[in-house]
Length: 208
Image (cartoon, rainbow, N blue to C red; front, side, top):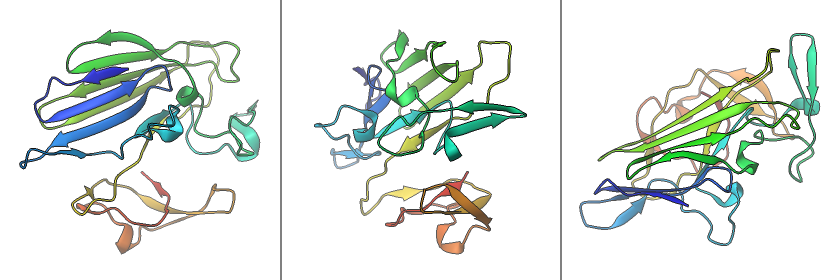
């Protein structure tokens, strides 16, 4: 477990052995209380599913028909959970290697595994400043042939009275019963997070 505590106002814990998942990310408010920025991890669940945030690499969401395609090449996948479709890549189910670790930052590496359907390398960088944290995620193809790849973060936000979220996005995706996107629509006003607003209490999917 890696704990980044160089900041007087932020503290963050990452677990390289369980999918490089963030287990806790808190800030110290003006009343002297630690408040979660991300939903605290479930202490009874050490997997990424019980975490505060985890990386999705080399693809995010589910693979339609358990196949990824690039040009005329199809890459068959096998389900990696009880869900019938492969979901969120494989990085969140792997042990990551700690390449560097100091008081305010760390670098984690996922080495290529030729036995996987997609052979890839990945790198995570985490930095904690005095008032912000920065997360980077990179994926690299070590081979000579192109591979289909994508990446992203899967955060869990707490529903606190003062929790607010801001990000930009281009479209709102409707979701089918298999959790795959169906239609892309213009972002509705109630889900426009171009300015800070409260986190919604219902499930939604947005293309960022």
